[in-house]
Image 1 (cartoon, rainbow over the protein chains, first blue to last red):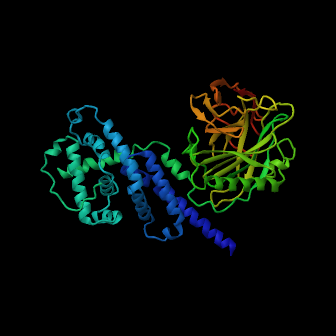
Image 2: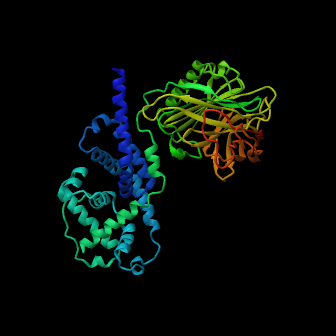
Image 3: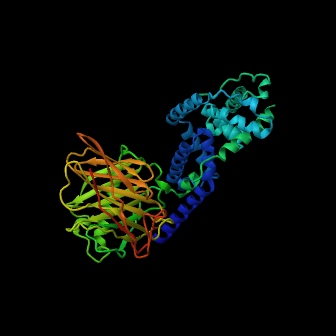
Length: 191
Length: 319
């Protein structure tokens, strides 16, 4: 009996280690994109995986353990304490960003360079707006999946996306900004 | 237009995600995320020593559960406030290891039985240094001391056995074995001394009596500990390493200790007393190659093994 129990326990631990191997990198990238800081992202993923480990016997039986881990990660990334710290960093970034360079004038309008131009503006988005964009356009989740993960309505996801896009257009000083303003939609999850 | 922005956004996010610094993913995969509720059943065998040790650094036991945190993430060059329960947890781990050493009937590398004081009996904690998740504690009995170093997934106990003639040497490597789920198995570590007291006896008021050792854990993580006693007037000490890094020591009640990741040596010490701060050079260690020719002060330190302790020795005092 003791041997059988130990065997099951070892198998469970091996499954968890495989889970970490398979998913930690992706979770790290998602965290990094939301909090915009590698050190904080690493801390968040460590905490996330530690929590998953504590509940692993239950989590391993789920259809998608990684969805559970991602939910923990998002909650950690957006909780009040870390948001305050992150906002402080963002304020520092904002104060450092006034380099006086007209980035739009210097950048040819190819798609790849468009992406590069977007980065500073992405970094200045409120974390919740960035989280919606990351889940929709990096994790490729649907609006419904994103809403479920964030605990909000689909309408809120749509409106948050619209507001984020509007801000990106404005902040990148890009020809895209000549597009007509995005209609105001109720229920954003801006900070 | 929105389609183009979405395309650019996907590219920007993927580009940004590719910019995560190297090593972060590896660190995450190497961590032990399970609660440390199980204990290793440790079997300790001391390896061959080097030289006739009057003062010897000997690794007494090493306990590794899963992997150590690569590069000692969270380390700080200045002592930090302990997290809630951190010191109590570290003391419990140390006592467990000390008891394991006592139960095993350990002998030193040259065949001498470890005195009872180093088998967990009669030792009292005299100083605890906390740097992030790592706790370094000195236990002392008489003129000798034992150091217990704990991190999120390991405990390393080493002892300094002082002799009467003030000679210095270094020795020691051990192997321990046990199981800790799939991450268990045999583990070893190595230690080498980089400095030791110039002589026995009382430390003068404004001086430090320095002893230091390089260690390498089984996963290749190297670290260096300096410790010792202070004169009565010493209120603080900061070490400058040969890579320029400054590391502030923890000092209290006539003792000091500090540690840092890697194998750089301390080249000078700033010693603070009520009358001011003075900077004193620390003599370079004299390298005594181990039996396998291993030089722990080289760029690539000796890796953990189950036998054959590397050794260097030196002496010095600052103040």
